Image 1 (cartoon, rainbow, N blue to C red):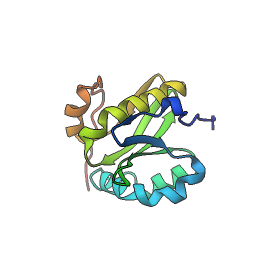
Image 2: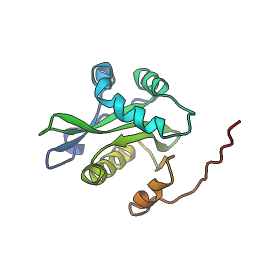
Image 3: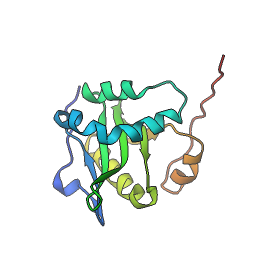
Length: 151
């Protein structure tokens, strides 16, 4: 696996008391309990193709990255992202949290900047239809439609 650069102080952005933090691999076990609830909620609203455990294992194995938006004033995690570089694109597996209006632009700017610094040429994510409204305004375009049939 290629070596990924972690956020340097100049890449860390904050808005009021919120900070976007890429968790170094060696701290994932310590921080995972803060992120797990957001990951679980996002996964529970998905299609069941991935599990909380599969994301946890991939982050522990250093195949994916764990990000937290931290509210310093309240000492709490308000958002969690699980990401991965696939070929030359930054893929967001999980985006979950609360108070999105407060952290959306902070996360977008920080994640995109980190992706570019690590050689990515674009970003991609899968999500529920409601994400289209949010992400259209940020320059994302719907390029795929997922079709599922249960039996």
